[in-house]
Length: 244
Image (cartoon, rainbow, N blue to C red; front, top):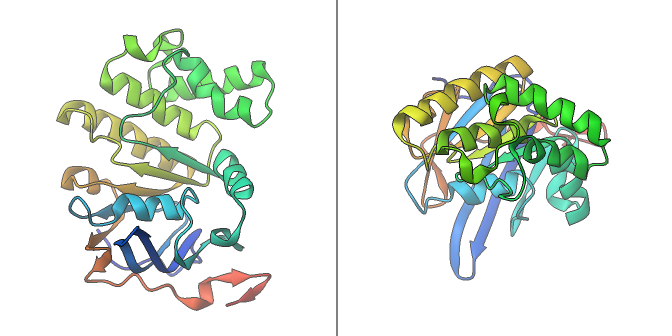
């Protein structure tokens, strides 16, 4: 597994991210870059800042200091509405417990991001069916989350995160609520599908077996990158058509 970033221009970059919860620092100047089509595993013990880093990169949380760039956009300076639109169209987010809507069936859950973005119902349901097929859970299309096993529900959640064909998938402990067998099945299918789609992935995990699915690994400890500092090559960050 590589420790150094690709020499190609990154799809996502972070510079000197700082974030705190009250007086408790979560990130202390983290910089990194994510290559196109790369699976980047972010590891570290509980409380090291992994989930906070992912939320900052995905635009869910605005850092106290530092910058996040998606291609030519400085998303850390954009409004909540702009960042929400980005997460609907260009980003996919997958959480540990899936967070499926319990009142909706599997196909309705997967179609939901498309419907929220204005797609016609027929087109959204057709796309949802395709993604359920890719994760081998199309037989559960009319099933509600409470009637699924943990592994089945998480595969439906991955299908929902991928239905918009995002450029970047953010996965926060995607197997943390699963046993080892179901976790391996989810990771095997997810890694295959994202590589076929050319999707870049930020994979947060404390499990070495899950991190092994990544192309590269960085370790966080006490809000900082342990060892390799993840510094962003400034020539790769472009703002308004000029390198910054």
